[in-house]
Amino acid sequence: MRVNIQHLSKADNKPLAPVYLLFGDEVLLLEEACTGLRRKAQAQGYTERLSFAAEPGFDWEELLQSGSSLSLFADKQLIELRMPTGKPGQTGSRVLCELVENLPADTMLLVISGAVDKAGQNQKWFKALDKAGASAEAKEIRLNDFPGWIANRLRHKGLLADQQSIALLTHYFEGNLLAAAQEIDLLALNTDVDSTRASDASAKPDAQHQLAALQSSVSDNSRFSVFSYLDACLAGDWQRTCRILDGLKAEKDESVFLVVMLSREVRKLAQMAAVLDSGSNRNQVFKQYRVWPQRQPIIDQAIKRHGMAGWQSILQQIAKIDKILKGRSQGEGASVWFDIEKLSMQICGLKTI
Image (tube, rainbow, N blue to C red; front, side, top):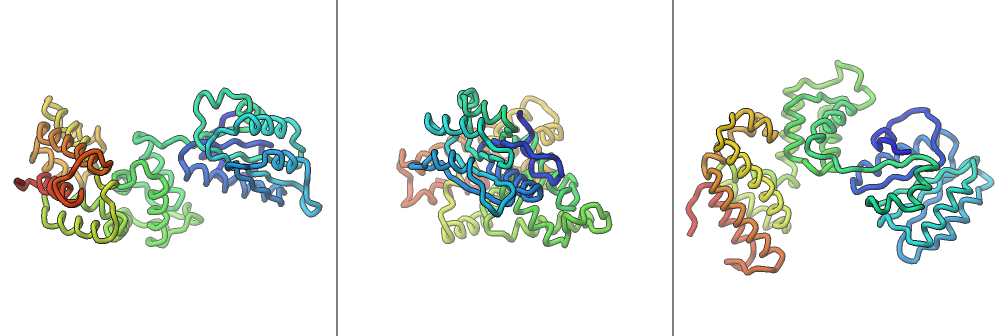
């Protein structure tokens, strides 16, 4: 039976299924569901926990034997199997089917797997686990659903799910649930809000103080240097852009991440410029591409600075830098940072030779 993986992390007293299969690439959702199931299992008498990992050389027979042995000091046991590849192989498939078929009433099986494609979901082992209990997929939270996920996360922590906070978090953490969750946890600490007081309206911060705390956290944390670079670069602030680039070079090599994020941003700008050239309303375009209000002046300025043709040309230059990073092309300087800095100055509006 397929269930929503986010529901598994919620505290409740519902009877547990004998078998759970959690699979997918979204690590945060997988781990939170596992934690939620462990807590429920503990509360329902599963006091013994056995853990296995299906890595190269794993003895599948040991897993099978564990299903028939229970400690003298435990009423029930939880068996956990981590299967990173999502492919148990012929022996593993046989053992899983046999284990599920003969699973004692005092034993619960939790299988945590990497992504399983459609073909894998049609295999005997997958169907056996799904039929015996519940399966849940940790799917990627897509851009359309990301603001809603953030809103729920903020409310769960007793914070305000206001439009500006959601927009800021969406901008900085799109596609990175773990980092978004960490930032929301930090925000709750900085604003002295606990999720246990979420129902107390007086405990919640007002929107202005919450946004100020969030903006301060984002700007002060070193891991957001790449995002600060993007803002400075698009705003045309070449001096600040140079300072940030110098910092990134001095601290650690962030060139790959920087190029990936710059490519994403420039691609969006080229698309927006094309839509605007077709006569679309500017406010509607900002809404369509989820440009939060405080960033709209920067984005508007950047689009006007280069136009559709300019941003498309810049996108082509980013592709060349990507080839340099992958060793498929030679850069102009001693390192790829020379090419990145030259392109950054061009984005800021300076003429480069």
